[in-house]
Image 1 (cartoon, chains in turn brown, blue):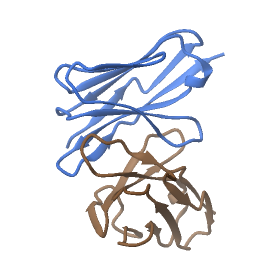
Image 2 (cartoon, chains in turn yellow, brown):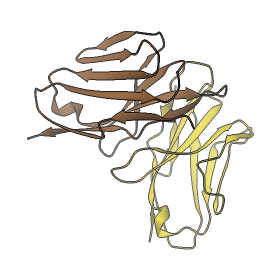
Image 3 (cartoon, chains in turn orange, yellow):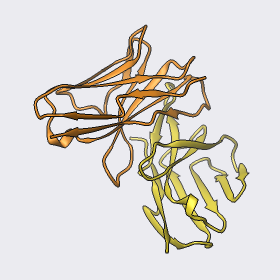
Image 4 (tube, one colour):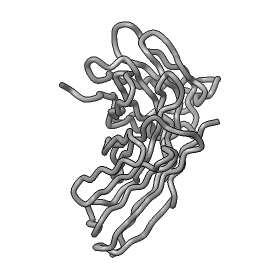
Length: 114
Length: 111
C-alpha cells in the first residue's frame, strides 16, 4: 500500500509563473489536507478537502491560490502568479475520514520562487 | 476559535537527559495525536490517545492524555540524537474531523 505521494519534490518557478502541486492520497483515503511550512516554523493549515468538495479553505489566501480534489486523480494545489513569499514546503496529508484516525503525510514539495 | 498549543516552543537538552513537552487545547478533544518531524523531513504519526487519563508507552516515549481531555504530554527518557526534531500535537475539530495543529516543540540535543 503506497503512502501519500507528492510531486514534484522540488519545484522552481520564476515570479509570475504558475505552480501546480500534486498529491495522491493513500488508497482508500478520501480526505486530503494541504499545509504550508516555512523554515523553522510549524505547519500552517491551508485547505481541507474531501472528494469533489472543499470542506474548509480558511487557511488559504483568497487570491492566487486554489485547490481541488476531483473524483478521479490527485488533489491539486495551484498557485498562480507566484511571488518570492510563496517559497516554502507544501505538505499534503490524507486520512480515511473516519473518527480517531491519524493523518499520513507526503514528503512535501519544496517550492522556490526566483 | 479552537486552538492547540505545545509548550515549550524550543527545548535544549544534553544527550541522555529527559525531555517533556506539553500540549494544551482550548476545548475538550475526542482524541489527541502526536507527530514527529525530523529536520528536512515530513511529519510522521507517533500515537493517538482517546481515553481520559490514558497513558501509552513506546520504548523511551511516554504519552499521556489529561483527565479533562484538554491537555497531553510527551516524555522522552534519556534522549538520543535520533530524537532530534519537532514534536507536534493535533486534535480533531468539529464533525468533519479536521485536525487542528500546534506550532510544535523543537527538541535540540546539545553537543
